[in-house]
Length: 69
Image (tube, rainbow, N blue to C red; front, side):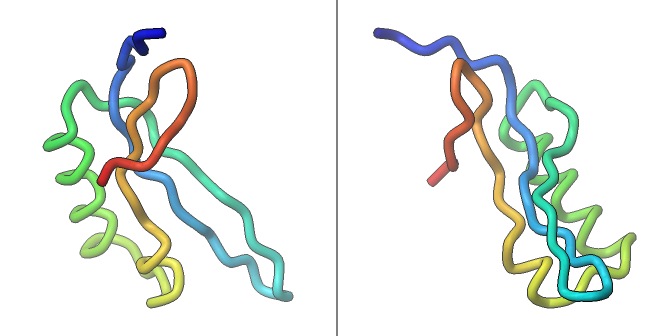
């Protein structure tokens, strides 16, 4: 079955004080390059911990969400 790619997004972990964590996914970008640019902006414009930053990855969104190698 061929998958139709809907777009690309950044997925990661957000740590909440008290030891709680949640997974987030950004809005869709048209290209992988745009999603990587969004991820770089997130690194430099927001105060994420190193653990959170290490969890960031670009994902391909189609019928299922899968990591981009």
